[in-house]
Length: 155
Ligand SMILES: CC(C)(COP(=O)(O)OP(=O)(O)OC[C@H]1O[C@@H](n2cnc3c(N)ncnc32)[C@H](O)[C@@H]1OP(=O)(O)O)[C@@H](O)C(=O)NCCC(=O)NCCS
Image (cartoon, rainbow, N blue to C red; front, side):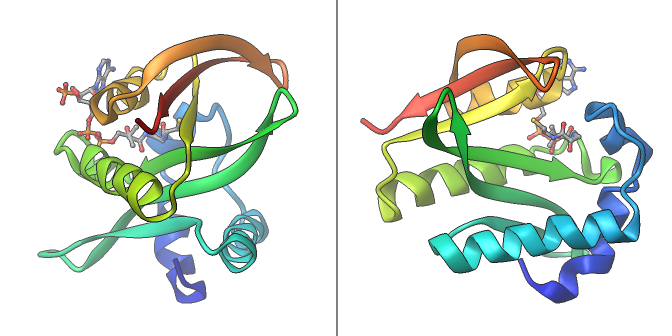
């Protein structure tokens, strides 16, 4: 992900269908800039983070997928996340990206475990997690909302 990806990323995070999954209004430019900067800082600090997903034929930045370190129950884990603009949904792209990031995380970064936090009811995201090989490990509340915790350990 690069600073110049801002405009294309903002299209994703102002897409009403995408934001419905987060039960959130579209991000403002300032919020988007904060999101992007946090991810760029994460990349600098840890050496990995979120990738932008490009559609090769269209030359369109259609989504993001990657890794973010976060604390769950006081344990630091790597979260595998993905978001795609809605006009590219249903073509297997999120799964393709998530499988590539899973393999990168296990084979190159040697991370022991991947976690995905998914809002309860987000069946498309849950299905992607399943296709990546993750299983449901827990259901819990975070910031007052119910989440499924999917995870996969490196064997
Ligand atoms: C989640 C998301 C990235 C999936 O992207 P995508 O490219 O459409 O995903 P894929 O095509 O790789 O796979 C989607 C799977 O979910 C299934 N699916 C889609 N909508 C579904 C629904 N409402 N109920 C059940 N399954 C559903 C598809 O059929 C497909 O499974 P299949 O291959 O077994 O048929 C996309 O919907 C998105 O960006 N949503 C908004 C942001 C978001 O939710 N991000 C994840 C936060 S945890």
